Length: 176
Image (cartoon, rainbow, N blue to C red; front, side, top):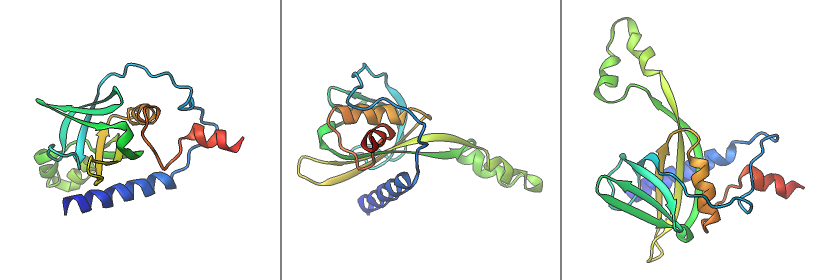
């Protein structure tokens, strides 16, 4: 059931990302000309789908030696870039005040709690579909600060990952 849910979420994220259009004046370097750099770990949260990791686990995410590494508490999970069938980025938002306090704020007088719950912060989403050693299809969703997902996606692509949604630079190069 959990795997079916993660596949549904991944398909929905991919559909939303493909429906978004990038501005034509946007310039980015193409993946072929990007020089691999030592990437610093990015604070992220594994929302769902990573084997051996609980839902909504905080940790750090980076690409190293052809693998996507998610390090949390005392454990480390890795996905080979060559095994990644699709990598998609997107944008979303989350409530600024979450948890019990966010829930209790909804009961504030004069519906002021409803206004507080509308305060949101933007986040990036990185969605990955990959195949395990037995050929099984898995999906993972990570959230991270704004602007952090696209560099990770580019690094994964340069190290052998596949994507179904072209980046703006690749699409612009195809029109020339």
